[in-house]
Image 1: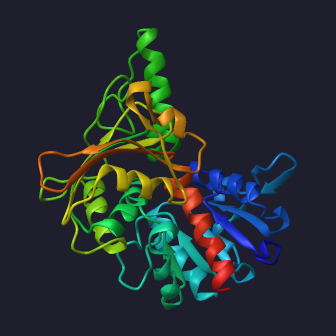
Image 2: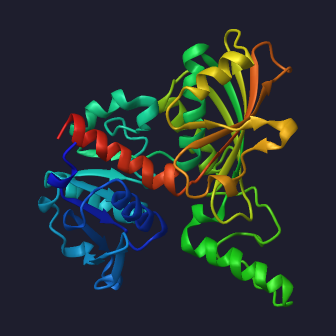
Length: 340
């Protein structure tokens, strides 16, 4: 892979995901002279570190010439992606978009490289590739190896999602509210609908007519698009007072028998998965262990005795890395290797 030959624009470079993208690009050997940091006009001229030695100066999205880049990694928010991603794509720049705006478009591939890399071949239809929802990524990283053993019929999911999924405002609100509890300076919620410090909130994204939230709908719709349209999914998505790292509890019903031993063996041999599962020794993953890590962690794999063929498992990952930035960069690496 000749990474040095490709010019990459990082759009939304000053946000949480944008900064993580820059950090991981550097870690994975993309030279700084081929990376351009792009953001809104209010961020123009800001300087962002690229590794320990290099500095990038933010360029304005409103006037940026995407014809100079082969790949653009977008994470500026859905409204901005909806306007600028098609413009970049029309200029021959392949867009990998982290927002939800294009995910369910039939002609836009929705990609987790370890799960459905074969769908990447259709990227040229729009020159846009969508990055899935962070919780969907870690769920399907765990489900795909099991689905290969025995087809999945139904999944019941509960998520425990950190405030970093709500961006810098979410991080700031948790920090300020936590501090306020101890100095008796309670602040009203701004980013969230309820206080997030020392609390959990069963509400991520707007509520839909059927009573589910859009985040819960995403997990169902994206699972069916990426893995198998026959799989039924019901989800409850909860915001928790954790800074980084999402957790997912999944009860999985299969169409045929699958043992815990063969499931563990398969997961242990799957790239991007790390099994940490010895409850007697208190060995199980939590968001703290996942922060800053590339792998998706699997713990507490056990039989679900309420259905004929069922397993229950606990899935943890760094939502900013594998749940967003790293997954997008892995897509870019496969584009460079196989298509560009």
